[in-house]
Length: 208
Ligand SMILES: CSCCC(=O)C(=O)COP(=O)(O)O
Ligand SMILES: [Zn+2]
Image (cartoon, rainbow, N blue to C red; front, side, top):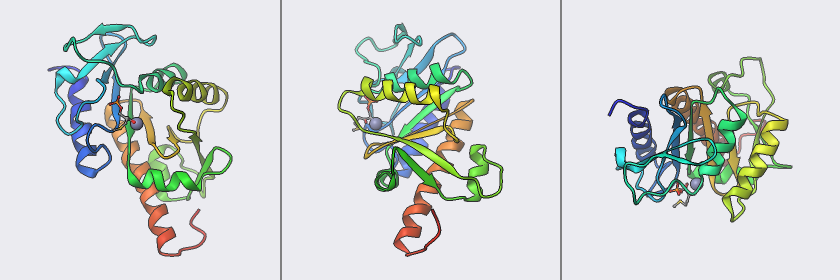
């Protein structure tokens, strides 16, 4: 298999082992050199993916390649489409469901979550001293295309300070120019969430 699916399978294994993609939770996609993007089929176990667990779509959601005819694209495909449309430089998108992401989503106000000014933000592209970084946080509406519409409208108007967003009580969606960069970004953001939860539990003030 000499295509982008290999990197997505490796990333899914990694996230599964960390507990961020338990069972069938989460989804992954990457733009394809052959056009459109590969995305995980809906309801597949993220610790056991193979090449049959992906579908190649164009940006309008038309199927370009479906190695398993029974496969249906991720239920959250519309969110990936929205991000690819907003950011031509996005090469891969990972959506993970960590416990920490769901805890910190409670601390959002006015659709934003202020991230602590940790050194790790440099890995997400924020190199200034003491950066004031707000992560956009969206309501978890029952109809996913409604979430995607809100995401696309907001990101078109105001690109986020880091390549990521959060859905309340659902999980983070993170992107990067390549599958490798998206993996780094996901790890860094999840570290920041873990820090926020740990700092709150330790009673540390001034960390947010
Ligand atoms: C068990 S997770 C519920 C659905 C979800 O939020 C998710 O990320 C996985 O959905 P998919 O259709 O991509 O399998
Ligand atoms: Zn999800």
